[in-house]
Image 1 (cartoon, helix red, strand yellow):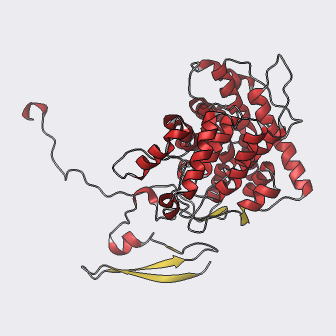
Image 2: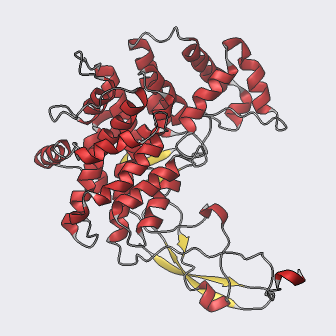
Length: 431
């Protein structure tokens, strides 16, 4: 990583700061402002941290202008076409693709960690029947520190590895338990003979009273969606995990914090918002009306699932998942569903409309993922939970990277204070 000196000068006072500039392997260089306050008495101001690199990371790279997403240097397109989610998990956690022996060992470890403590399972009975699944998942994940406190020494490499395998393995079981609780159905235990995505679907949809046959297209679609959502650089929830973990908090609480951040509608709730939008549009015959509303800057209506804050050209994940979306609808015979007909027609209108093309407002991964989940029979309240299952391995990878970083320190952003100046307290009788 090359370095050079960047000089910043205040033209009013003449005070100058000499700051190092760092260049990574890909992407824009960054200016190290850690000495800025000491040299100038000033902080930087960057609401939302949109122009601030909060850490060094070797996990994921995004080029939003070119529509590039790399996991550990591998294009997501290649991983989606040739890999499996469990192999991508290994890649993100360990930095390299595994040999067959390493993959088999890792896969076996994940399969044998899927069960959750029976006492933990009974926690779900304490939640109201209509509790949101994300509330349950966040709460139960946070409680894991009360069950596995013997392996939470964050300075112990073996403890960190056990935690990593445990949380990746148990998230589908916790998610399925939350789903079954909302349905009033019996909890289904994990099966070690099934692969990760098959096990997830089996726990979601099987019941003790009858056999359940997994649809291979459904399994393929879920595995693909998990790969595409596994990591996405320093997004809100990942940054939350890093910030919470920077205090030395136990890793389960850091992951629970990430789940809570993901629950926000501006982050993980986007695919559910897509379905809400489609239901609001209601019919194919209303598309032109709502497209016109979306173009009107004075109208509050927005087309959800189009464009992306990071990708200014196209979302590479959407290109991959689009074909799977059509494959799922074709296989499951759901194309005659009015909502799916509406979604596919809206997709075509947006891809051809000059307004959307000029602004590069292409359908993103959230547009297609919500449609797939609905076609598979997954309730919209579970969409963000599915996102959390996929993203857990990314959160853990970033947490691991942060804990082992020699430059790691507790996160402590600064502020631009705009409140009252120093003033004296007045007794209540004199106010």
